[in-house]
Image (cartoon, rainbow, N blue to C red):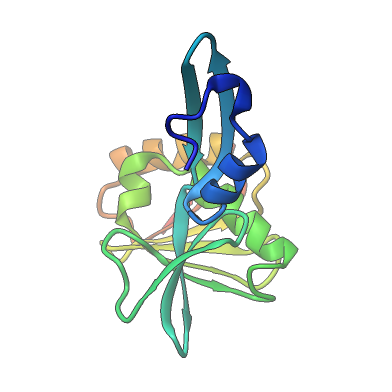
Length: 169
């Protein structure tokens, strides 16, 4: 509705109202470039997985914002089993873990479970179980996990809850 409006008369609250209709937008910024250019910079929400419910599978981001619901699990998205739901500290911990995963491990993750802040567990499509523990040191744990998988491709389980001392089973 703001197209064709002189730059000085563009109503930022109307732009905001129009953008709020899109749940995939996490943040945005308006930048006026006189005499006639308005740039809208958008940061999209990054999904971390799906929550199963009676309605189907709801794709959520790390803040627990529902992005879409489908009857089947969307390809490439892990199913999240989190005690306390999307409003809990446990969910926040899961979000931090999933966002820290390297792309290849993230793509292979089919399930994430957690009942407390300290027991996040991943299940990969290969059948590998990864005991992550808490979200603390997630970047280091991700590096450790990648190294362990290269050195032990046939591993059935990997415990990186202590990033310095991984346990391979």
